Each structure stands twice: as C-alpha cells, then as structure tokens.
Amino acid sequence: MPGESGKKLFVGPRFRRIRQQLGLSQTQIAEGLGISPSYINLIERNQRPVTAQILLRLAETYDLDLRDLATADEDRFFAELNEIFSDPLFRQIDLPKQELRDLAELCPGVTHALQRLYAAYTEARRGETLVAAQMADREGSQFDANPIERVRDLIEANRNYFPELETAAENLRDELNVPTEGLFTALTTRLREKHSILTRVMPVDVMRETLRRFDRHRRQLLISELVDSSGRSFQLALQIGFVECGASIDAIVSRAGPLDDTARRLYRITLANYFAAAAMMPYQAFHSAAEALSYDVHVLAQRFNAGFEQVCHRLTTLQRPNARGVPFFLLRVDNAGNVSKRFSSGTFPFSKFGGTCPLWNVHSTFDMPDRLLSQVIELPDGTRYFSIAQMVRRPVAPYPQPQPRFAIGLGCEIRHAAKLVYATGMDLEKVEGTPIGVNCRLCERENCSQRAEPPITRTLILDETTRRVSSFAFSNAREL
Image (cartoon, rainbow, N blue to C red; front, top):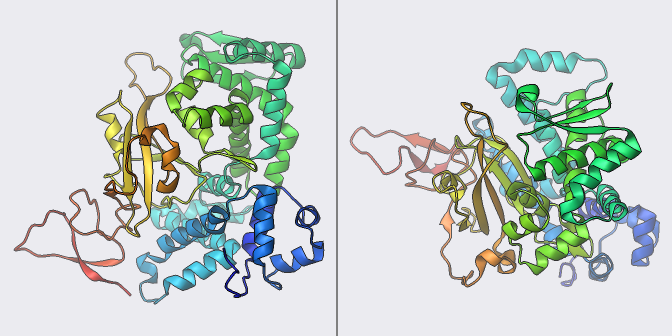
C-alpha cells in the first residue's frame, strides 16, 4: 500500500479525479472519510500528503480498487504522451520517460492540451490548415481538430460511466415493469401515451438510406424494417432518452467545458445512446447476470435481447461503486483496419493517431465469421491482456449493396481473465502471449513479417544485399 514506507505521498490530481468520478463534492467525501473539507482541499492542491489510513478508508468506504485507480488514468495519459513525443518533430529533444510519467500524473490537464495541440498539428499536416483556421476564427468557439476524438476523451475522462443516466434508465425499467420480450411494446406505449409520439416501422423503399428518423412536426418515430428487434428497442429507448433525460444530458455536457457545436451535438447523441443501452440492460440486473454467467456475451445477448456489439459495449460501462464489473476495453474495426469505436475502462493504450496491430486476432474474424476467437496478447513493455473477438453484421443491406461487417474486440488485463468463461481451463500464468504493438509506427519489435511501416523512433536501414522477414529494417538505437 502506498505510504506505508513513511514516504510522503502527494497525489492531489489523482485524488481529485477519484472524487469527481464518484460524483462527490469535497464536503461529501470529507464526511465519508471523517476528515475536514479544508484538508481535502489541501490534498487536492498537493499541499498535504495522503496517508495510508486515508487511502484504506477511501477504498473501504467507496469500494475502490486502489491498484486500478492509482494507475489506469496515468498509464493511459503516459501512453498518449509517449505517442506524441515519439514524433520525429521532437527527435532533437532528449525527454526522459520519467518526465512524461510525472507530467501524466501531476498535470493531466496539460496532457489533454498537448493531445489537442498535436491533433491540430497532424490535421494541418494533412492539408486541412484552411479549415482549422476558419474554425479557430469563429468568435467564441474553441478549436477542436477532431470532434470525434474530443468526445472520446470526454467518455474516457468519465471512465465510460454516467451515474445519473444509469439511475434514470433503471427508474424507467422499474416504471415499465416488463420482461425483456415485452420491452419494445412497452417503449412504444410510453412514447405514445406520455409524449404523443407514434412509432412506425417503415418499408425500406420509403426509408431508403435511413434507419431511424424522428419527424418533429408529425410526432412520429420512423424505424426502417431493416433494423432487427434489438435495434428497434434501442432506437425507441434512444428517443425516450432525448425527451425524458434532456436536462441530465445537458448537465453532463455543460460539465465538459466549452465545446464547439459539432462536438456538443456528438456528445449529446453519445450520451443518449448510453441511456438507451442502460435502459435495455439495466445496471443491477445486467451486472448480476454478467457475473453469474462469467461474462458469456452470447448468453447475455439472448437474455437481454441485445446484439453482440451492444453487450460488449455495455460491459465497458460497469463502473458503479460497490458493483463494478471487469474493466474491459472494446475496439471496433472494419476489414480495412479502420477503427470506428474504442472504449476503455482499463489501461489498454489505444493509439490516437494510427491503426491497430495486425497480429491481434480481432482482424482474423473476417476469415472466420461464425467463430468467437480468444487470445492472450502481450505489449512490448510486458503487459498482458486477454481478449475475445468476433465479426458482426450490421442491419441488413438490400441487394446489391454490400453487407456491412465489423470486428468487435473485447479484452481486459490478464489478472481479470479468470472471471471470464472464455478463459476456462487455461493456465493464464503460463500461456504464451502473442507479441503485438500499439501500432506499427510506435512498435519497436524487430523481424515482424506484418510490419506496415518502420517505427518513427528508429532510423530506417536500407541494404541492397539483404532481404529480411520484415519489409523494414531499422537501427537498435533510438533517434534523438
């Protein structure tokens, strides 16, 4: 336990993030820990150390795993900073890794600022300087080079958990008081009787390329016949989220600080989607079922009438104090390797400026579309993870349009894998992990036959007399 050696432990920013994730004020957490609000204030400003007794009391009172809370955010921030400062732009700067770790721990706000600045820089390099300048010149606006990344950052900052939306979703299900198979009818009735919104399932030749549309003037929610049963329930719950939880959603958005219009709208839609999933899979019932079923995704999907992707996504949100699930990360990619969704309630270091490692078997699911694949993967720093992956098909596309296909990867740190049915019978301590990298541009593993580009931290070596397994050979020494 940190602090037992007698060394003073100053963790102000980390302590503040824990408090904010719990949704508590300084006064409320002070009451829970039996200390004064002024002492909490001093701790968060790094003017007083945190004792082992306070940390133990914090863990016991709020059911916290201090191993996770002490490292998850810092590991993620460090990985992001390491990716930024690996750019050749900084090769002349000898920046020790410990300094990056110190920055990630003590100044998370600076880390966010650097991420956004680097994102703007990379966008400018891609020829979007004019667009960036136009956005920056808008009076009262805040420049966001990529609103999708901005919203992803906000989701990660909240550990993909929003207690007020969870409570609202559970209250809705309690009021409806129907089993899973009756949810669509109950939601349809709710929209009609409480909000005068009529739900209509429309033929594809009417909806054409639209799966869902809300007609404000006629008060009709139109859903394409191509949407399956779980998708229809989700779209109804989404609409209820907008009309019944608008104030809660707006309050969450306002806490994010200044956002441009695109990021604000995207954040609202993302939060409404969060509510819809929580309404289909209410927290307490879903968490209890997940634990009892050892996180069997297919059985959970059947029990809650949800899709494979919906269940995997929901599993990344189980962060309620006193009822936490396994801290999963999730990735969605297409068969070209493009990442369209990523969430992490753990420490997996997703890349913000590149794709994923081709050795991760999430890409292999396209060759085995009816199989769920499992894998132990190991990053260059020795961290090991357990993951499952399966290909999913999106709503049916009318002929001759191509059928949309995506691969869903779900994983966790190896220390949590024993709780998963997919790891039954495996000796997790001895099983050999597949060596992967975050992506090619950051991975320094040699002789990888799947390498698509050399690491930006090494000097490329060209030799006319030799052809190696890898298409790229590079020096062992880091570039400075």
